Length: 218
Ligand code: SAH
Image (cartoon, rainbow, N blue to C red; front, side):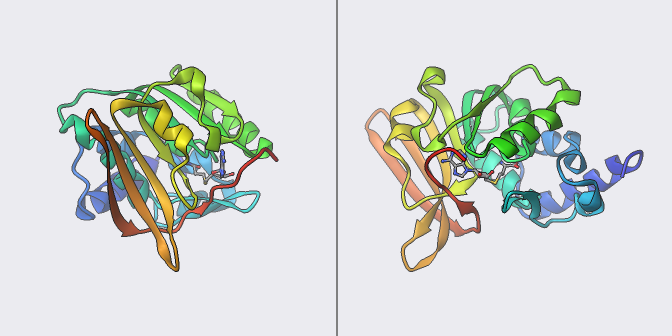
């Protein structure tokens, strides 16, 4: 991976378009951010395949098509007008790949991780990229991050039983939450929650496989 990673990314973006993602800002970000920099060198040659990959401490980075889908869902309320999202809260920094993508589609990214090992790794991964609008936080994302609120969007990379009330409280009116949520006996599903002036509107979308949302630090 290196000189020709641009071509591999372009092929990845083509596949993502075939999966139905159309948002130009999301596609531009996916074509720009070098996913191979966020995984172990031994896995770098798989970085542009549409597969989830291990990132250490039992956690995984989602496959690119799912990441792109979630980012597009976050931006849909803006109706693809090319405007950036405002402040965004990400639960589950992991290796910071999605945080780097978010930095291209929003004005400011607050990304919170509960595992110190991954929080440190995320910092290392981002250092050479010198991205000014990402704030990495070590903490329990189930509590959100009140100091950055209100958020235009909240996205979770880990799935719980329900969307924590803190996220709803910290979401701006007009804002949107995209998160995997356990489906009882059935599979985990992607949940979209819009905070409208008249109240919450939620829709449950396709089945997904995300690592569990856990409380507390480790
Ligand atoms: N967006 C990440 C994906 C990381 S996987 C990336 O691009 O790499 C999901 C992450 O959520 C894991 O690192 C896990 O430790 C973290 N996580 C789970 N529960 C959490 C919580 N309550 N607060 C913060 N992070 C949490």
